[in-house]
Image 1 (tube, rainbow, N blue to C red):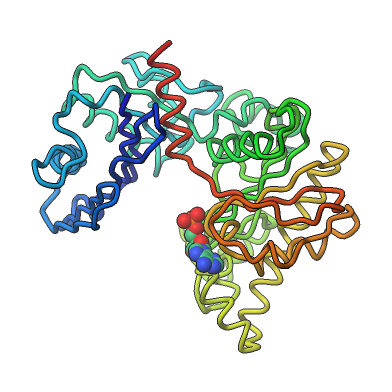
Image 2 (image 1 turned 120 degrees about the vertical axis):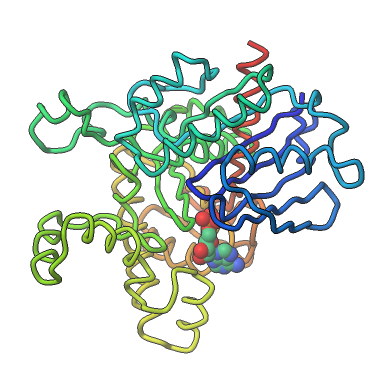
Amino acid sequence: MNVLVINCGSSSLKYQVINSDTEEVLAKGLCERIGLDGRLVYQKAGGEKEITEADMPTHKQAIQMVLDALINPNTGALKSLDEIGAVGHRMVHGGEKFACSTILDEEVLKAVEECNDLAPLHNPANLIGVRACQELMPHVPMVGVFDTAFHQTMPEKAYLYGIDYDYYEKYKVRRYGFHGTSHSYVSKRAAEMLGRPYEELKTIVCHLGNGASICAVQNGQSIDTSMGLTPLEGLIMGTRSGDIDPGAMEYLAKKEGLDLEGVLSVLNKKSGVQGLSHISSDFRDLEAAAAKDDPAGIRALDTYNYRVAKYVGAYTAAMNGVDVICFTAGVGENGPNTRKGICDYLGYLGIELDEEANLVRGEEKIISTPDSKVTVICLPTNEELAIARETVALVNG
Ligand code: AMP
């Protein structure tokens, strides 16, 4: 079956068509600047990237352009839209309602809508994408794969905050965690690579991209993760602060004359390694600066690595040990210096990094020595493939 995987944001949309039998990507691309001037990027497997500038005032028009590109007689990957057997949608927040992926019928869509308050930037955009696909492909089954679902196995002690329990009962204020599809895919794949039973491993997945989170996976289940009610908590990220004393928000608000929205904008958009360095949120720029002994670049990278290492320590304690540590996403897959900088803190776990193997970028590879007490792996994530697999499993029932 061919699955169209859609990841719909407020002004952009990423897509892939995956043949679920061969797991081959037949075509992929994105729509940018939806609602503004519009730009479609389309690439058929083995083909060149095609870029089309065209008005796409709504998500429906954007998806229509994607579908037209997919069946274009010259460069299309498909002969007709009948070749799309299902659509898998990345959904950001499923609250406590969704502990696994689900077929998107009207009742489910209503339940997703009820989670909108929890992710006001993301969920409405996801829903717009689903509605647009439903209109354009009314007979094709739609599946929702939630970023939060994998973490629904967390025990109460991991997901509760130390605040009045009424806030949990009334408003469901708690840790949800994100990047669940990636943490699930990577932890499973690590077990496969090692030929070990997934249900017996203690794995820590470091998803280090522009957004970053870390997850403790014990016996095949997420037992703790660093992002919280929103994706702002936890690790230092590209532009997000991660953990910070909530009292600092009031202090900053007074000093800078900001309201709550203003402070949150600072924490989401002007913090992280970007804010720490004043150089960039991109680790390539930071590493180039650090290589020239620029103290701002060094400061940002040191602070970042230290925070990740602290979480690894915490999750090792939570699981009473760790067998495998995986590095994934943009920085995790492509940043040997970051991986080494983090592992340098972890000698107490008996970790020995194979410095030569650690030079790998974007490929699955064990980067610890055979003697290392914990296996460390560079393991590219593949959220689209994970979504396609979940979609097919549900549609085939
Ligand atoms: P993601 O959100 O997973 O797409 O990750 C994006 C981030 O990965 C970028 O902002 C970069 O900081 C980082 N990244 C991508 N390529 C490299 C590289 N070759 N070396 C270091 N960091 C990289």
